[in-house]
Structure formats: structure tokens, C-alpha cells
Length: 168
Image (tube, rainbow, N blue to C red):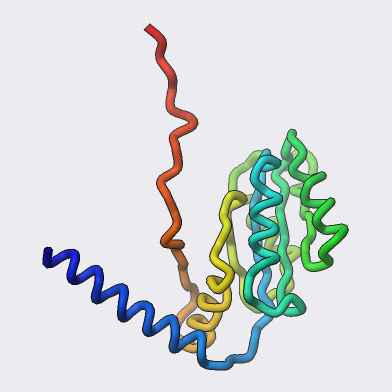
């Protein structure tokens, strides 16, 4: 019961903070969203569409999908979206250098990013429309911060697709 009450009170204070931050005007810094992707063709379109739906000025936003040597249709899907939305760009890990991990992929993306602020989302993320605004506002408001982290209340544990299946 005590934990439930604490969680409720924390939720109320978090909601009040969110409302306060969202109500205060602030200068919109340019944001580069980096999305590392390897064989994400099945989810990448919904993710990029969710980024395009963010409540953040489109002229202050670029969305870089960094393709890590995908063997599926990930690059083609992203190129199709980029043809319709100028803030979406496909960045490819140089040939022969793919498959060396997410950090390597993000480092390649960073060399193309022009934003004052860097946001990183996984290729299967679909953030709430207000999330980027809220995160950037918190970062701009408190000069002591070097980074902020958001977690959606809709995040669910992912199924373990890699779990081995044993037949007897």
C-alpha cells in the first residue's frame, strides 16, 4: 500500500513538472535524431513516421537513419521516406565496416549530424509526440545537465525472440 501511494504521489509530481516544462517557451535548438539500424525493414517505417510526428519544429530537426550493412530492405524503406521528407536522411556505414556494433554505427552517424543536441532512438522505438520537446526543454533549462533520458510509460518487455526452442 505504501509503495502504491508513493508511486501515485511521484506520478502527480512528475505530471506537474511536465506541465510546467511544456508551458515555458524556450529557444528550439537544432536536434539530430540518430537511429542505428541493421535489418530493421519490418519496423523502420513506423519508427521514422513516429519521429516525423514529434511535436518539435520540423525546420529544427533532422532524422538520420544509420544503416549498418542491412541485408533486408531497410535502406530502400528509408530512402522512400527521405524522398518525401527532407529532414530524413539515410547514412550508410562504409562498405566493409558494417556489423561492428551499435556504438560504431552511432559514431558513423555522429560524423553526419549537424544538431546542437543529439537524440538517439532504437529502430523499433515509437516515442510519444511530446517526448522530444520535453527532453530538450529539460536539457536547455538546466545548464548543469549534459544528457537526459526518457522512458515511455508504454514500454513493454520485449519477447525473447532469440530464446532457443527445444523440441522433445
